[in-house]
Image (cartoon, rainbow, N blue to C red; front, side, top):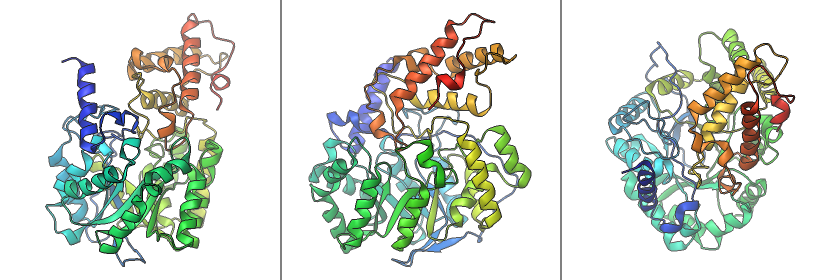
Length: 485
């Protein structure tokens, strides 16, 4: 069986797992598994020191650290598990890490029918079912992105399948998944949840206790976020919690980086007005705030040499008092231990430390990277382009100041060669940016609302420019000019 046949079979299996049918190709494949870098720590987290927050709606005592089950460990820890998500999930390791998390006070586990190509709920259910039901809270989502799942029957089937896969009789925290997305955020919101009566169905399940907390996660069109909160204000629905993206870069700079996004400062303030607890996603921006450009990372380490760069971002998110829990996709035990150290217990940031991080965020914006979190919602590309890998390579070179941007730089030739060699190693030639035809399927699924085809074309033009140059003869145009966002 060749690789293409394997991809087709894998995709069919994912579609079958979601119960979507043949037209589900347009659904975002949220498939992250074993990705990210390990962060070693010699220190063992203490038991019994976890910081908790109380949900004012239910009295739930929720761990400030929430376990995101989006990127699960695989049997081959070196497997890239990119858009295909074919690497076998290491259930034994999932069990071990869940056990360790619960032992150290973590009790909130967040999954979705779409994570890891439909396998996350199943694996999460196996791991958690080995514990007493009262020891943990399960959060999952109605991930009915695709029009094939917009019917009432299909959406109800998805919800009921979540109960089955998770091996539970009720869901502690149920989210409408990623409202605001799509080409027309409001139209899609209505099609997914209003016109088919599914929101009312979920409200009914809430009243029966099958859903204990009802909320939504938000990405995209701010009009949909405001509309959902207006429904709350009018008494049409009571949101028990809302999941938003919050970190020290997005607090004031989300819109500056991409004018399609909304600053976390606004999102959080709107929830505080209504006394709605906030669940935080992307505290590390898909790992970007754990792998800062060297000068910024050194600034953090100099100020606090005893803790990781990532711990600053987790302390930042946890410092806000209306935050119920902060989600982290902890692929490796090292991730879990480092985050447990940060929240066992949390030492809130001081006002001076908050200002310090604002300075780091302002400088980070100047690096002008593509705001990709490597979440892989854009995958698979129908033309085989490895979109996240392209952006990861570009951002890495730019952040480490290794991109060939100044023809007067004496290191220009070596930087040029390193960029091109690294690009070919990171991304197969048939999957590089020059194969993008601009179909736009990826763009409507991007939580960061990146103009993906436009960015790919810029990178493709720049790569082509570098390849046309003869060694020792620099092009007239600089890197930043070619790729200015």
